[in-house]
Image (cartoon, rainbow, N blue to C red):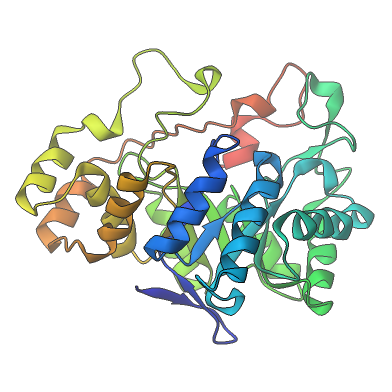
Length: 317
Protein backbone atom coordinates (compact mmCIF):
# COMPACT_ATOMS: atom_id res chain seq x y z
CA UNK A 1 0.00 0.00 0.00
CA UNK A 2 1.36 3.40 -1.01
CA UNK A 3 1.67 5.91 1.86
CA UNK A 4 1.85 9.66 2.32
CA UNK A 5 4.81 10.71 4.43
CA UNK A 6 4.66 13.44 7.06
CA UNK A 7 7.47 15.70 8.20
CA UNK A 8 8.37 13.56 11.22
CA UNK A 9 8.52 10.38 9.15
CA UNK A 10 5.03 9.08 9.99
CA UNK A 11 3.34 7.39 7.05
CA UNK A 12 -0.38 7.38 6.35
CA UNK A 13 -1.80 4.65 4.10
CA UNK A 14 -3.05 6.49 1.03
CA UNK A 15 -6.32 4.49 0.96
CA UNK A 16 -8.59 4.41 3.99
CA UNK A 17 -12.12 3.56 5.02
CA UNK A 18 -14.56 6.47 5.25
CA UNK A 19 -17.28 6.27 7.91
CA UNK A 20 -19.59 9.21 7.07
CA UNK A 21 -23.16 7.90 6.70
CA UNK A 22 -22.26 4.43 8.05
CA UNK A 23 -25.30 3.45 10.11
CA UNK A 24 -25.31 2.12 13.68
CA UNK A 25 -24.59 -1.60 13.74
CA UNK A 26 -23.30 -1.51 10.19
CA UNK A 27 -20.23 0.56 11.05
CA UNK A 28 -19.08 -1.82 13.80
CA UNK A 29 -19.20 -4.78 11.41
CA UNK A 30 -17.64 -2.73 8.60
CA UNK A 31 -14.62 -1.67 10.66
CA UNK A 32 -14.06 -5.21 11.97
CA UNK A 33 -14.19 -6.56 8.41
CA UNK A 34 -12.05 -3.73 7.03
CA UNK A 35 -9.26 -4.46 9.48
CA UNK A 36 -9.46 -8.15 8.61
CA UNK A 37 -9.21 -7.30 4.90
CA UNK A 38 -6.13 -5.16 5.46
CA UNK A 39 -7.35 -1.58 5.85
CA UNK A 40 -4.98 0.31 8.14
CA UNK A 41 -6.46 3.81 7.84
CA UNK A 42 -9.89 4.70 9.27
CA UNK A 43 -11.41 8.17 8.86
CA UNK A 44 -13.81 9.28 11.59
CA UNK A 45 -15.54 12.42 12.90
CA UNK A 46 -17.45 13.24 16.05
CA UNK A 47 -20.45 14.53 14.09
CA UNK A 48 -20.88 11.19 12.29
CA UNK A 49 -22.30 9.87 15.57
CA UNK A 50 -20.66 6.47 15.26
CA UNK A 51 -17.29 6.81 16.99
CA UNK A 52 -18.30 4.64 19.99
CA UNK A 53 -19.05 1.71 17.64
CA UNK A 54 -15.85 2.28 15.69
CA UNK A 55 -13.99 2.37 18.99
CA UNK A 56 -15.50 -0.95 20.04
CA UNK A 57 -14.45 -2.53 16.74
CA UNK A 58 -10.92 -1.14 17.12
CA UNK A 59 -10.66 -2.24 20.75
CA UNK A 60 -11.77 -5.79 19.97
CA UNK A 61 -9.52 -6.03 16.93
CA UNK A 62 -6.49 -4.89 18.93
CA UNK A 63 -7.34 -7.36 21.69
CA UNK A 64 -7.80 -10.19 19.19
CA UNK A 65 -4.42 -9.46 17.60
CA UNK A 66 -5.89 -8.69 14.17
CA UNK A 67 -3.81 -5.52 14.14
CA UNK A 68 -1.79 -3.43 16.60
CA UNK A 69 -2.46 0.21 17.39
CA UNK A 70 0.87 1.34 15.98
CA UNK A 71 -0.04 -0.24 12.63
CA UNK A 72 -3.15 1.93 12.34
CA UNK A 73 -3.78 5.47 11.15
CA UNK A 74 -6.86 7.00 12.79
CA UNK A 75 -8.18 10.42 11.81
CA UNK A 76 -11.02 12.34 13.46
CA UNK A 77 -12.41 15.86 13.29
CA UNK A 78 -13.34 18.72 15.61
CA UNK A 79 -16.99 19.69 15.22
CA UNK A 80 -18.05 23.29 14.66
CA UNK A 81 -19.56 23.82 18.12
CA UNK A 82 -16.21 23.29 19.85
CA UNK A 83 -14.04 25.93 18.17
CA UNK A 84 -13.49 28.05 21.29
CA UNK A 85 -10.02 27.46 22.70
CA UNK A 86 -11.34 26.01 25.96
CA UNK A 87 -13.56 23.51 24.08
CA UNK A 88 -11.01 21.99 21.69
CA UNK A 89 -9.22 19.62 24.08
CA UNK A 90 -12.41 18.34 25.74
CA UNK A 91 -13.82 17.58 22.27
CA UNK A 92 -10.74 15.53 21.40
CA UNK A 93 -10.78 13.77 24.76
CA UNK A 94 -14.40 12.73 24.11
CA UNK A 95 -13.40 11.35 20.71
CA UNK A 96 -10.45 9.48 22.23
CA UNK A 97 -12.70 7.96 24.88
CA UNK A 98 -15.26 6.93 22.26
CA UNK A 99 -12.57 5.40 20.05
CA UNK A 100 -10.79 3.64 22.95
CA UNK A 101 -7.55 5.37 21.97
CA UNK A 102 -4.80 7.22 23.81
CA UNK A 103 -3.99 9.45 20.83
CA UNK A 104 -5.06 10.23 17.26
CA UNK A 105 -2.74 10.14 14.30
CA UNK A 106 -4.50 13.12 12.73
CA UNK A 107 -7.07 15.63 14.03
CA UNK A 108 -8.79 18.06 11.68
CA UNK A 109 -10.91 21.20 12.02
CA UNK A 110 -13.99 19.83 10.24
CA UNK A 111 -15.23 23.10 8.69
CA UNK A 112 -14.15 26.75 8.76
CA UNK A 113 -17.57 27.43 10.29
CA UNK A 114 -18.48 28.12 13.92
CA UNK A 115 -21.71 27.02 15.63
CA UNK A 116 -22.74 28.14 19.10
CA UNK A 117 -21.67 25.81 21.89
CA UNK A 118 -24.35 23.23 22.65
CA UNK A 119 -25.90 23.44 19.17
CA UNK A 120 -25.25 20.34 17.07
CA UNK A 121 -26.51 21.75 13.77
CA UNK A 122 -27.82 25.28 13.13
CA UNK A 123 -31.56 25.77 12.75
CA UNK A 124 -31.15 29.43 11.83
CA UNK A 125 -28.52 32.14 11.50
CA UNK A 126 -28.70 32.85 15.25
CA UNK A 127 -26.97 29.50 15.86
CA UNK A 128 -23.92 30.55 13.83
CA UNK A 129 -20.93 32.67 14.86
CA UNK A 130 -18.83 34.51 12.29
CA UNK A 131 -15.10 33.99 11.93
CA UNK A 132 -14.63 37.68 12.78
CA UNK A 133 -15.94 36.85 16.27
CA UNK A 134 -14.24 33.48 16.78
CA UNK A 135 -11.38 33.29 14.27
CA UNK A 136 -9.78 30.11 13.02
CA UNK A 137 -6.48 31.34 14.45
CA UNK A 138 -7.86 30.90 18.00
CA UNK A 139 -9.04 27.37 17.26
CA UNK A 140 -5.76 26.51 15.55
CA UNK A 141 -3.68 27.64 18.52
CA UNK A 142 -5.65 25.21 20.69
CA UNK A 143 -5.11 22.49 18.07
CA UNK A 144 -1.37 23.09 18.28
CA UNK A 145 -1.60 22.55 22.04
CA UNK A 146 -3.02 19.07 21.43
CA UNK A 147 0.17 18.07 19.62
CA UNK A 148 2.27 19.52 22.44
CA UNK A 149 0.33 17.28 24.86
CA UNK A 150 0.73 14.20 22.61
CA UNK A 151 -3.05 13.81 22.27
CA UNK A 152 -2.62 13.75 18.50
CA UNK A 153 0.44 13.42 16.29
CA UNK A 154 -0.65 15.65 13.42
CA UNK A 155 -3.21 18.42 12.86
CA UNK A 156 -4.95 19.72 9.79
CA UNK A 157 -8.19 21.03 8.39
CA UNK A 158 -11.10 20.02 6.20
CA UNK A 159 -13.11 22.03 3.67
CA UNK A 160 -10.60 24.91 3.71
CA UNK A 161 -10.02 27.21 0.74
CA UNK A 162 -6.56 28.18 -0.51
CA UNK A 163 -6.95 31.62 1.11
CA UNK A 164 -7.80 30.10 4.50
CA UNK A 165 -4.85 27.70 4.24
CA UNK A 166 -2.53 30.60 3.37
CA UNK A 167 -3.74 32.54 6.42
CA UNK A 168 -2.84 29.57 8.62
CA UNK A 169 0.54 29.15 6.97
CA UNK A 170 1.30 32.84 7.55
CA UNK A 171 0.55 32.76 11.27
CA UNK A 172 0.68 29.23 12.66
CA UNK A 173 3.41 27.73 14.81
CA UNK A 174 2.59 24.30 13.37
CA UNK A 175 1.45 24.38 9.74
CA UNK A 176 -1.60 22.35 8.71
CA UNK A 177 -0.41 19.01 7.37
CA UNK A 178 -3.69 17.93 5.74
CA UNK A 179 -6.72 19.42 4.03
CA UNK A 180 -9.56 16.95 3.57
CA UNK A 181 -11.82 18.12 0.76
CA UNK A 182 -14.28 16.84 -1.81
CA UNK A 183 -12.29 15.54 -4.77
CA UNK A 184 -13.36 13.48 -7.79
CA UNK A 185 -13.23 13.90 -11.58
CA UNK A 186 -16.22 16.29 -11.54
CA UNK A 187 -14.46 18.45 -8.88
CA UNK A 188 -10.72 18.17 -9.50
CA UNK A 189 -9.55 21.32 -7.65
CA UNK A 190 -6.28 21.48 -9.57
CA UNK A 191 -5.29 24.87 -8.11
CA UNK A 192 -5.71 23.45 -4.60
CA UNK A 193 -3.65 20.38 -5.52
CA UNK A 194 -0.87 22.61 -6.84
CA UNK A 195 -0.95 24.95 -3.81
CA UNK A 196 -0.81 22.11 -1.31
CA UNK A 197 1.98 20.35 -3.19
CA UNK A 198 4.08 23.52 -3.10
CA UNK A 199 3.40 24.08 0.61
CA UNK A 200 3.90 20.56 1.94
CA UNK A 201 0.22 19.98 2.75
CA UNK A 202 -1.34 16.60 1.96
CA UNK A 203 -4.85 16.26 0.55
CA UNK A 204 -7.49 13.63 1.36
CA UNK A 205 -10.34 13.11 -1.09
CA UNK A 206 -13.78 12.65 0.45
CA UNK A 207 -16.89 11.66 -1.52
CA UNK A 208 -14.55 10.17 -4.17
CA UNK A 209 -17.41 8.14 -5.70
CA UNK A 210 -19.86 11.05 -5.86
CA UNK A 211 -21.65 10.44 -2.54
CA UNK A 212 -24.87 9.13 -4.07
CA UNK A 213 -26.02 7.96 -0.62
CA UNK A 214 -25.81 11.40 1.02
CA UNK A 215 -28.99 12.81 2.64
CA UNK A 216 -31.79 13.74 0.22
CA UNK A 217 -31.69 17.37 1.37
CA UNK A 218 -28.17 17.65 -0.02
CA UNK A 219 -29.19 16.48 -3.49
CA UNK A 220 -30.30 18.51 -6.50
CA UNK A 221 -32.84 17.25 -9.01
CA UNK A 222 -31.16 16.06 -12.20
CA UNK A 223 -27.63 16.24 -10.78
CA UNK A 224 -24.92 14.32 -12.67
CA UNK A 225 -24.16 10.87 -11.26
CA UNK A 226 -20.43 10.25 -11.22
CA UNK A 227 -20.68 6.45 -11.24
CA UNK A 228 -22.82 6.66 -14.40
CA UNK A 229 -20.25 8.69 -16.35
CA UNK A 230 -19.65 6.83 -19.66
CA UNK A 231 -15.93 7.62 -19.83
CA UNK A 232 -15.34 6.08 -16.40
CA UNK A 233 -17.18 2.93 -17.51
CA UNK A 234 -15.03 2.81 -20.66
CA UNK A 235 -11.78 3.14 -18.73
CA UNK A 236 -12.95 0.56 -16.19
CA UNK A 237 -13.64 -1.95 -18.95
CA UNK A 238 -10.30 -1.18 -20.57
CA UNK A 239 -8.29 -1.91 -17.41
CA UNK A 240 -10.46 -4.72 -16.04
CA UNK A 241 -11.69 -2.78 -13.01
CA UNK A 242 -14.95 -1.43 -11.62
CA UNK A 243 -15.98 2.22 -12.03
CA UNK A 244 -15.44 2.74 -8.29
CA UNK A 245 -11.93 1.30 -8.56
CA UNK A 246 -11.11 3.71 -11.40
CA UNK A 247 -12.27 6.68 -9.30
CA UNK A 248 -10.25 5.56 -6.26
CA UNK A 249 -7.20 4.86 -8.42
CA UNK A 250 -7.54 8.32 -10.02
CA UNK A 251 -7.22 9.92 -6.58
CA UNK A 252 -4.17 7.80 -5.72
CA UNK A 253 -2.50 8.58 -9.05
CA UNK A 254 -2.82 12.30 -8.20
CA UNK A 255 -0.96 11.71 -4.93
CA UNK A 256 -3.97 12.33 -2.71
CA UNK A 257 -5.28 10.09 0.05
CA UNK A 258 -8.77 8.75 -0.55
CA UNK A 259 -11.42 7.45 1.85
CA UNK A 260 -14.29 5.66 0.08
CA UNK A 261 -17.09 4.70 2.46
CA UNK A 262 -18.70 1.27 2.38
CA UNK A 263 -20.21 -1.20 4.83
CA UNK A 264 -20.49 -3.95 2.21
CA UNK A 265 -17.66 -6.52 2.61
CA UNK A 266 -17.35 -7.26 -1.10
CA UNK A 267 -17.25 -3.56 -2.05
CA UNK A 268 -14.75 -2.85 0.72
CA UNK A 269 -12.54 -5.58 -0.74
CA UNK A 270 -12.94 -4.14 -4.25
CA UNK A 271 -12.17 -0.62 -3.00
CA UNK A 272 -9.00 -1.84 -1.29
CA UNK A 273 -8.01 -3.55 -4.54
CA UNK A 274 -8.15 -0.19 -6.32
CA UNK A 275 -4.68 0.50 -4.91
CA UNK A 276 -3.41 -2.05 -7.46
CA UNK A 277 -5.30 -0.60 -10.44
CA UNK A 278 -2.96 1.15 -12.88
CA UNK A 279 -4.21 4.06 -14.98
CA UNK A 280 -2.23 5.23 -17.99
CA UNK A 281 -1.25 8.83 -18.69
CA UNK A 282 -3.87 8.81 -21.42
CA UNK A 283 -6.51 7.63 -18.92
CA UNK A 284 -5.58 10.49 -16.57
CA UNK A 285 -5.70 13.03 -19.40
CA UNK A 286 -9.13 11.82 -20.46
CA UNK A 287 -10.41 11.99 -16.87
CA UNK A 288 -9.00 15.52 -16.54
CA UNK A 289 -11.51 16.54 -19.20
CA UNK A 290 -14.45 15.65 -16.92
CA UNK A 291 -13.91 18.57 -14.51
CA UNK A 292 -17.18 20.49 -13.98
CA UNK A 293 -16.36 22.22 -10.68
CA UNK A 294 -19.39 20.24 -9.41
CA UNK A 295 -19.72 19.96 -5.65
CA UNK A 296 -21.94 17.26 -4.20
CA UNK A 297 -21.38 18.74 -0.73
CA UNK A 298 -22.03 22.39 -1.51
CA UNK A 299 -22.03 23.76 2.03
CA UNK A 300 -25.38 25.48 1.42
CA UNK A 301 -26.54 24.22 4.83
CA UNK A 302 -24.28 26.85 6.45
CA UNK A 303 -26.11 29.67 4.69
CA UNK A 304 -29.60 30.17 6.16
CA UNK A 305 -30.95 33.68 5.76
CA UNK A 306 -28.77 36.12 7.69
CA UNK A 307 -25.86 33.69 8.07
CA UNK A 308 -22.30 35.05 8.18
CA UNK A 309 -21.41 32.20 5.79
CA UNK A 310 -22.05 32.20 2.04
CA UNK A 311 -20.82 30.02 -0.79
CA UNK A 312 -18.62 32.95 -1.83
CA UNK A 313 -16.83 33.36 1.51
CA UNK A 314 -16.78 29.63 2.31
CA UNK A 315 -15.03 28.41 -0.84
CA UNK A 316 -13.54 31.73 -2.02
CA UNK A 317 -13.46 30.61 -5.63
